[in-house]
Length: 110
Ligand code: HEC
Image (cartoon, rainbow, N blue to C red; front, side, top):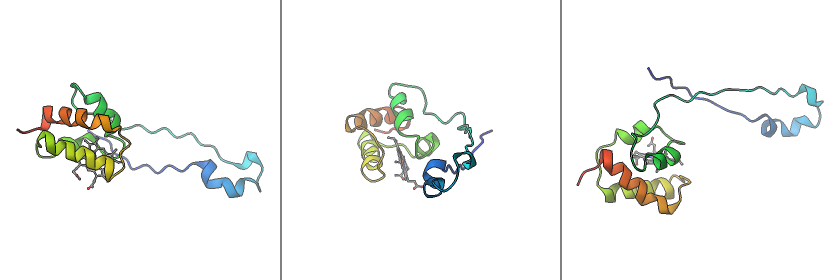
C-alpha cells in the first residue's frame, strides 16, 4: 500500500521574523517534524536511473513519468527540456540527453 501525504511546512524563523524581536526567545516554539516519503517512489534501476531519481522527483512522482505513453528519444528529450525551461527543473543542460536516453530504455518507442 502506498501512503501519500500532503505536507505543509512552515519555517519558524521565516514566519516569526517580525514577531520574534518582541518576544523572549523561550516563547518561540521549535518543533521537530519528521516526514517519511512514500517508499517505492523511484525509477526502475538502470543506466541513468540515478540521474532521474536525483532530478525528477522533487516535483512529482516517478509514476507520473512511468505511466506516460512511450515516447521516442527526441520526444523524451523535448519533455525533459520542457521540465527545465518551462517548469524550472534545476537540471544541468548536459544531463538532458542522458536522462532522455534512460527514459527510452523502459518507456520508449522507435
Ligand atoms: C521543477 C518541478 C519539476 C521537475 C524537477 C520535473 N518536473 Fe515533470 N512536471 C512538472 C509539472 C509542473 C508538470 C505538469 C503537472 C501537471 O500537469 O499536473 C510535470 C509533468 C511531467 C510529465 C507529464 C507530461 C507533461 O508534460 O505534463 C512528465 C512525463 C514529466 N513531468 C517528466 C519529468 C522528468 C523526466 C523530469 C526529470 C528530468 C521531471 N519531469 C522533473 C514539474 C517538474
